[in-house]
Length: 314
Ligand SMILES: C[S@@+](CC[C@H](N)C(=O)[O-])C[C@H]1O[C@@H](n2cnc3c(N)ncnc32)[C@H](O)[C@@H]1O
Image (cartoon, rainbow, N blue to C red; front, top):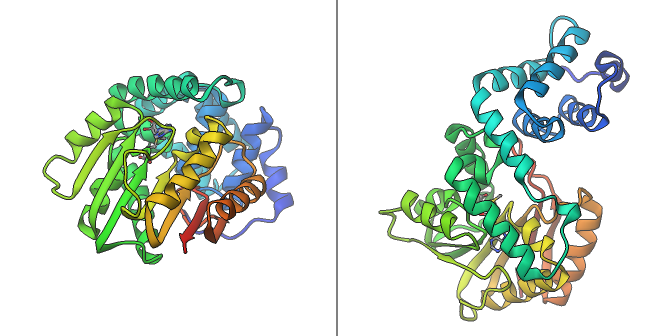
């Protein structure tokens, strides 16, 4: 993120002026107070406004009002949009088709099936955008964020040549490809057969990487004490969406398949946009599954806005 002199809150407010809708104003405030990076802000604006054209118009209006010099974060967002115009349109299309979490109901199998269809379709359009809207379809942006996540897992001492790892909701296998040099085994599971097919193709030739299609409801395919690390990057909100029983099962299952001392790491827990509520729920679930909660809803990343939860077995 660009380093700038911190602006007084009031000054930001005045310079932004009227921005409609309110959600877009909130995104810009988060950006200008360094809560989120320009790539995350741009993907949120695309979601809020529905397209690249609308986002461009809003940014142009904000720039006119802001005056000179333009804040470097606003400039960076405008440049990203300009340089990734087609990717932004594709991301906006995908976001429009994304099942609305607030309107979903029904049994877990139905919810899992809805997401399976969505991800099966999305990955055939653009692999990077299908797993991360903020990538804007650009492999370079996605790999910067992937590196940020891998560096954090390393800093937490969760990797090593003797470690077996399992990702729940692996998508196109970007984490497995990046972890391969640092772990003994990188396995990924996903409910979407097309995601698994894509991940296998992208990771072909990496001997310690493997993938399988999962039911989305448990980890029944794995024996007890099989892994040193079980983790979920941006996929647990979908598990959460499938209902409290599925969430609870995943916590107990993660505890079962982990070796003593192993960790369960969730990067983004739910869609409800309340870290406080997520913290309370994770605290309860981790206790019930016998975990020690070692991190409860921190934001350790600069580029990505992932909220981190870490639980240790034993
Ligand atoms: C936003 S993508 C993230 C993929 C990958 N973790 C990454 O960050 O690149 C979410 C993935 O979770 C998968 N998914 C959704 N619900 C799931 C569930 N209940 N169990 C396993 N995977 C699930 C989707 O198919 C999709 O590939």
